[in-house]
Length: 115
Image 1 (cartoon, rainbow, N blue to C red):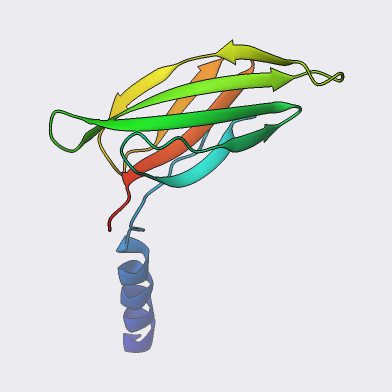
Image 2: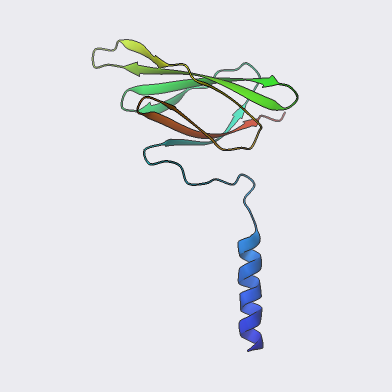
């Protein structure tokens, strides 16, 4: 009986630990970019598959909050690149966000890159 209680306590303690960057379920079809470490004004590039890509660029706003501007492009079979959308988000670091433009949905957790 005591062994069972001890095992249950260990299990519950193990379950109470939260990851450093908690994630929730993303909507079906969302491309999860995970944790992205941004540097002020430095664009990053990601492939979204299906001939699409995104370039997020972040800047600090009011303290440590982040504004991320996205350029989402689509490349067709002959190599022509078209602007697909330019959404933006404002958030605090470590918070999971999802952006959607048409049928493109992107999940990410923005962070500031520490030196």
